Each structure stands twice: as structure tokens, then as C-alpha cells.
Image 1 (cartoon, rainbow, N blue to C red):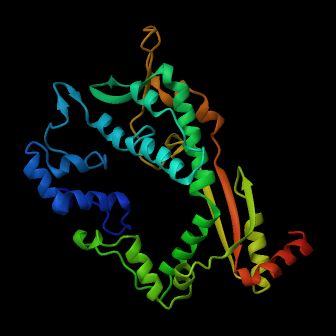
Image 2: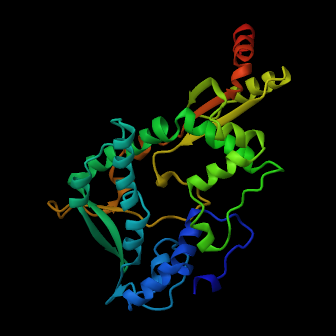
Length: 312
């Protein structure tokens, strides 16, 4: 079983770990076993975490292993979640960012076999829609997910969670964990005497003093932050970094199975990984960085005056 496999017990659990724990240890695990006799919870979580070992040939059909393509449907540059949340978030935010030609992309999805492994593939005629999909998601991160209000509440919550008097903990028991929703967090923050918890509960966030957009890491935000703190002004520096694609991941991260581009009309064109079939990855190679300095609204006037007078 999943729990018996060797994992680093000292690292902090992420949302994928809780997803796996939910599938393997909650009531849904019993439902899977009872309603789908040929499928075990381990087969499902194997698509969430590619490092999980499977001893049987469940994902094989003859000589072909379909685990890579099924895993890519769960998590990849063209997974079901990404194609769903982009349009949903765009709709509920009332913006045009994130609008994509989802139906055309889905209609042109296929598979490509490499060394007995089935990989997700895209017909070349939909490659431009794929480019648009990546750019739309990229802009959603920069303009919506990295919105200054969202970032400051995240930073204040982090300050509370790392405070010595923070007593909010996520329980390891999955049945208890499922009770920890947004309401429970807000209820906890409202009852806490911690300054940061109270700011969040009563919606008194720090205010944006300065916002800088860069392609490379800059020393200016840290320099200004240090100068203001020497003037007894508390500053929160938040740096949001967005990259276009998983294909820009560092060499230290495990390599994801590639998505291929195939040409259904020109059979002389060989299938190739998507990052080689389009120039979009090279054009957006660099990270987009948004640095923001936030201060207490009561100190905003003083901080703004200092920046203006000192020409920081």
C-alpha cells in the first residue's frame, strides 16, 4: 500500500500528499473498492504521484503502458484541471483573461507511443490554440492569481502561521482534515489574539506602497525595504514569480513525461515533443517577477514621503 512505501517523513506535506491520503484512507477508498472491484485506491494515486510503485500490470494493455498518458490527464500542461479552472476563474472574476478554445484543444488530443509507453499528444493544427492556452494561463497568474490583495492576505496569513503564538494546525487524520475548510480558518482567525490573525479577520490588510515589474531579480526592493525599516516602518516584501510552463522547471525537479505534437495530414512530419514544435517556450523563457512592498496604512503617508524625498 501507499503508506508502506518509502517517503521522506521529514518534509512538509503538500496538497498532493493530502489528495493521496484522502483517496487511500478516507471513506472514498472503501467506495472505490466496493464499486470498482478491478481498481484499487493505489491505482488512482499512482496517477497523482509518478514515483509510486505499482506491482501489477493494471495500466498495461498488451505491450503498451498507458500510465503516462493517464497521469498527464491528471497533471500536465494540458491536464483536465488547468482547462477547467482557467475558464471558470475567468468567468467568476468577470475578466477576459483565461478564455481559451477548450473544445478545439480537446477535439485534437490524441496519443503517441514511445518505447511501449502511451503519451498525450496534440494534433499540429491545434498548436496555435495550445500557445494561446499557455499565454492565457500565464496572464491569469500575473493579473489575477498574483493580484495585490490576494498576495497581501497570503503574506499576512504566512506571518500568522509562522508566529510563535500560532496554534492553528492541520490534523494528520484525514477525517478531521476534511472539516478544515475556509469557514473554519476564518473562525479560528477571528478568535485568535494574534495581530496578523486579527488583521485578516477584520480585513485590515497592509497597503501597496510600491509595485515593480521585472524580468530578473532586482536588489531595489530589498534596498528600499531595509531603508524604510531603519526609519521604523514595518514593510512586507512579496515577490511573485511566474513562468510560462513546466518545461522551464529546474534540472533538480523530476522530468515530466513529454506531450507530443503529431501531424494527422502530413505523415512525413515526425512526432516531436511540444516544446520543440513551438517557439512559445523560447519566447517566454524568462520569468516575470512582480515585487511589491506593503506597509501599514497608518504608516503609508510617511513611507511614501520617504521614498519621494530620498528618490529610492
